[in-house]
Image (cartoon, rainbow over all chains, first blue to last red; front, side, top):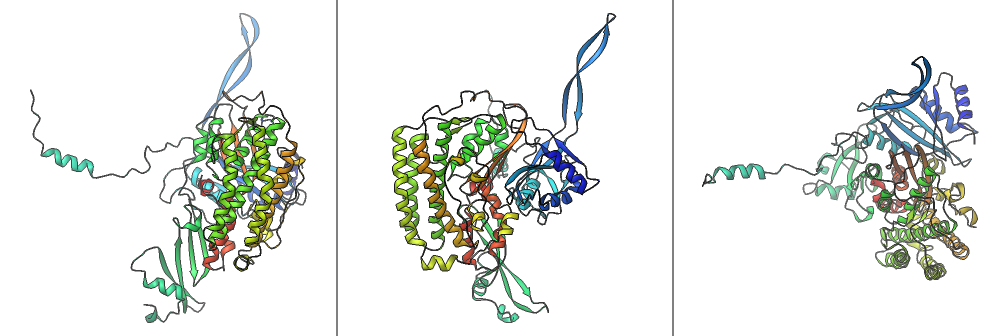
Length: 211
Length: 404
């Protein structure tokens, strides 16, 4: 199968103006992914599906990833003059990476039996209902999985035919798979009349006898 | 009420309308022809979540025109416990017992899919003997899953009790094998990253061989009951047809995909583990109907028996764990991996992102039966209400995995 670089150059040739980035992966298997911009995601997805050399007709896995705002520490070497002698000193440079949400697609080809090509798109921020583009019109198999991404991560999949919660119930508030989600102590808590009844009852108690 | 409006309703709809005062489980919606004239009525029925044919807590919102299904929306999530979030808060190994509870019929293959993904993430090797043990366990799991599925499937068609008990009798023999090696019948928690938890004995292998030798005869008996049974043929042939194109586009995997005639078996495509060493065929369907989905499972079990015969014959001796694999303090390097296997229900995948710490940063299960439900409506449209139950049975869902 083609390398991510080859796929990238062909995608850019087919769709001028599309911004595509190859993301590194340090694990031994090392499947690098293609990050596409939301404006061109749908066109690029159609190209990947219909291109005779790739034929990625099977979208296996769709999921979201939450990346909250993080402080990245980078070690850089700085030259400094100490006591008249130039020395190299290691310094830690701190940068703040703004938070974002990501949708990841794992694509395979059932016809040519190769894969995976990992496709990613990013929602710009972590607001509730941050938009990304739904690819359900290209691969029907995304339908339920994109609903799940909407349900658990709060990414609004633009163009999805039936965007509703799927695993959580309809009235649920919040997005449980986000990193900053705090689960309530008791989901099934319902106020009971006990407190009121107790209060009423206490009015009838005799005042405490103090020794 | 209907007589006054001059509505011609179907028998089922009218009967239900009379009961409307007592129950709120359905509502009647008016249906108009193109000219705006009422030509009958649609009945909205909520099947489930406590319906015996839904294989757990699963609900179908069905819109009926008489007995014909005109709309169907699956509703689930009743068993949702956010498995993925739990896994992100505990160590890699800590999730292994939780994967047993996904598809509780096939804990061995769930373990394998998870172990495979972590091994891919951390670059661990698996010793020869452990690979053979994994294949034996996975194929035994496939046998018991398909056997039980057919038992449930014919029960949904009205063959109450007996066939299911035959299936469970055979399943129990396989579960006995699992119990003697892992200590648990269903929640095996047997695989580890870089091998399996403990070795199997020669007596165990002899018992497994005895079971595998006898299983073909059981399948013959089982098939004699169903394969040419007139009722089964009438209820399944031409029912719930799934086209090849839709099956591929909707990410359907496993026996359902192959029943639609697509040659895609991950054991053959990815050749994970040591599957390239075994001689077996991938059975394919022709029509994509419910009967094909039944038949594919019977044929797959026969192929599994072939693999088991070869694996039990060739299993070498040696260690069952990679000595480099660490059970405690396991921290894979930052990166991500997606590993997948052919579980009895389809492609079971695990997508893991590591940030270098002891817990996975992102842990995602790609559940086959959840995604196979995508086209339930497409298969049921235009069919009778009684057939939806049979079609759902042939999809093979386990709610522990659908809802996660």
